[in-house]
Amino acid sequence: MTLLQTLIAVFAFSSAAMILVWLWALKIRNIGIVDVAWAALMGIAGVFCAFMGSGSFTARIALALFAGIWSLRLFLSLLQRVRHEPEDGRYQALRAEWKGSPAKFFVFFQGQALVVSLFSLPFFAAAENTSLQPGLWLYCAIGFFCLSLLGETIADRQLATFRNNPGNRGITCRTGLWAWSRHPNYFFEWLHWFAYVCLAVGGTHFAMSWVGPVLMLAFLYRVSGIPWTEAQALRSRGDNYRRYQREVSAFFPLPPNASSKESL
Image 1 (spheres, one colour):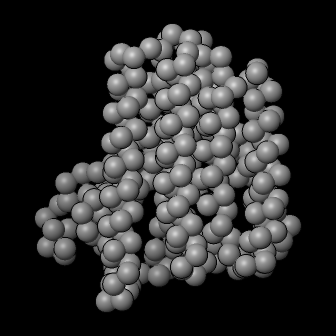
Image 2 (cartoon, one colour):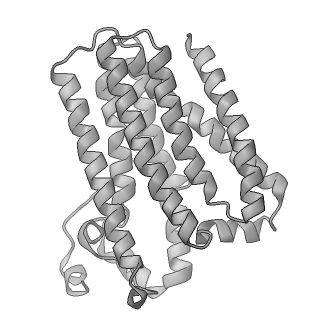
């Protein structure tokens, strides 16, 4: 399939799926389900590109495994949160701002389908790489993938354990990785996209693979990641979170400063 055909197919499927998820979200009154759907659709897009690609078997099987495993872990983690917790405060704030408008949420959900299509570009670049064989770049890809998966899993578990303790209500998590970065889960999510850059090295569409880490960094820093999350944290934890902002790196894991250590 050509790039245009792939993007059209991914968007058409994602758009249709998001319509169903939008209807479901209206029924259960929990917009957070959009994140669960996004994670699943990204995995489907990755496997689809791998199956339809014309690159080497090594590139395509690695792509399918990376996208599938990453997507499944994120999907299950987010699904667990949506099933057992109230609607995320970020979406509660958005619901209040939009006065619960179904039309605005429909556009929002379709925007997420478009985002799935954009993040399919690195998948396409990797799937079309005919030169990748077992060697340095494959091993680098495996390294990036394993490190990011491990880091994100640890960060999610540390946060879940902290939040499950009623005594921590209103307090910011500073456990483990959360003492080094305010958003270690976002950092490892971003790092994961370098695996597809490595898979695309030597391919015709290599430059396209950089859409993943570049676009993800922009989204996390400026759009729906850190700005939304920290705005909600400030609403719910106030000065406790302001202190955390002053003491701990926003994104890249860095050693906590002295005042941060004292508050652990």
